[in-house]
Amino acid sequence: MSNHFADRLTAAISAKGSPTCVGIDPRYDLLPADISEQAGLNDPHDPESVVDAIAEYSRRIIRIVAPLVPAVKINAAFFEQYYWDGVEAYYELVQEARSRGLIVIGDAKRADIGHSAEMYARAHLRKPEMDGIDEMMIPDAITVNPYFGFDGVRPFIEAARRDDKGVIVLVQTSNESCTELQGLELASGGTLVEHVGRLVNQWAGDAGLLGVCGYSAVGAVASPRDAASMARLRAMMPNCIFLVPGFGAQGRGAEDVAACFKADGTGAIVTASRSVIYAYEDTKYLEMYASEWEKCVEHACKDFVKAVADVAQP
Image 1 (cartoon, helix red, strand yellow):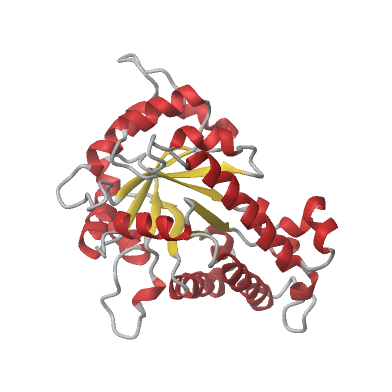
Image 2: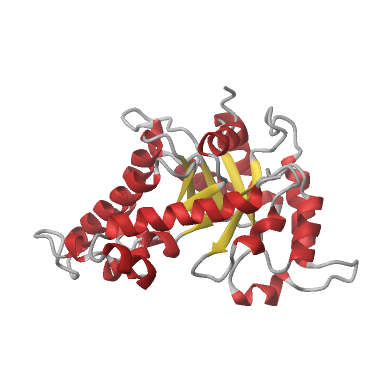
């Protein structure tokens, strides 16, 4: 099999039979009691105790979902708040997930220019050049912000091309206020989202970035606002795989994400976080499994996988 990022991702999607990704966004105050009340993990004022707790929880989430989904998205912000202990845990969890055969997307949304962008690319995407650092600690792909233009994205794309990694560029996000900027109408016609989409599609078609599968190592974060605008975005970015946030807790459902896929059922991977990893807070699953939080997560993940698979089928 090709080692190209898009080829690896499409192969993993095909093997699991569903284009889905679980987001790892751990919060200490929401952890199940059998973790947060353990000795050594039960001090909310001790950063080492908190990090150990969220790392244990995240490892168990990864083990539950690994047989069900092709990818996980680990949100760096939920670890960086705990300083050096949290950053170490982030990279350890990347290694854990990759060792279980999952495609790992580092959700870091980095952006800068010049040497700063190069350093971000080294930290989050490039294979290590120093001894003693396991390559498995580096994600398969990273999310980046395009606000600086191509100067800010180029170092990440160069790293992806060199090391068979992926770059997933923010195009249309899932938060409500995104339209304040992304929805702006341009004098030349269309919206800012569509302009950014055209730029990303142009970057995605650069030499050496297309895989055998026909998709580029450069993809796009693209959350649906409405079917018509998403259909336009899908048509103008034919070589980009869409990472689709907003499913579940943010209100998007299976019918909402359907327009993110091409007619053949390819071209997108849908991510859900809170609706899966905190399923033990959902009455629906609690009624089935009471205090068995891991079974709640597993069942919610299976429901998510089936819902997306049903609308992604050609």
